[in-house]
Image 1 (cartoon, rainbow, N blue to C red):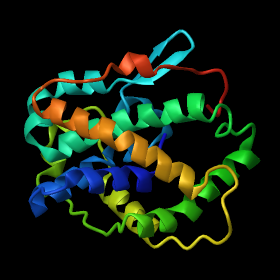
Image 2 (spheres, rainbow, N blue to C red; image 1 turned 90 degrees about the vertical axis):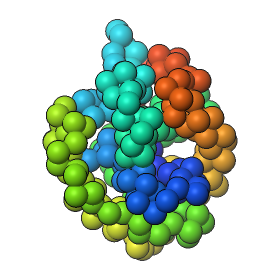
Image 3 (tube, one colour; image 1 turned 30 degrees about the horizontal axis):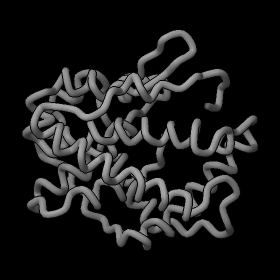
Length: 218
C-alpha cells in the first residue's frame, strides 16, 4: 500500500479550492484506512476482497456502504480515494515494477520502510505539504467507526512526524522520481474518479486491480 505521505500528497493536490473546513476533513479522510490499531484490522479498514489467490481493495463496497456520505462529506470521499490509490499503487508494484517492491525477508522489509522515511521529507518538500489536519468534533460519532474504531488522533500524530522526518541516506527500493511519476500518472485518474464519486458514480472497477498474493510480503 502507498505510504502516508503519498496519500497526503494526493489529497493536497486534489483538494484544490475546497473551503478550509472541508479541506481538513478531506485530508484526514485520505489517511483513515491506515488508522487501525491492530494489524488484523487492516483488511477491514481497506475493504479487502479475496478470490482464491487474488486480492484487491474494494472501494466500490465502501461506496455502496456509504453512498450519501461519499457524495456529501469530504472525509468519506477522502477515505474512498485512499482505497483507489492503494489499488493503483498495487498495480505499480505488480505491473510497472514487477517484484522490485517485494521484500523477501524481514531485513529487506526494514530497508523498504527506511526508504519510506527517507522519502517522507523529500516528498513533503516537493509538494509543499503542510500540517492541515484537524480532528473533527463529530469524529467518534461517525458511522465510519462501526467497522473498526479508527485512531484518528494517532494518525494525525504520525503524519505530523512524517512531515518533519529527517532520515538520512538514500533509498534502496524506491526513488523520489519513481513516486513522483506515480503521483503524476495517477492524479488524472483520481481527479476523474473524484468527479464521478460526487455524482454517485464510478469510472473504475475495483476487481480489475486484483493482484496475485503468493507470499507474505506482497
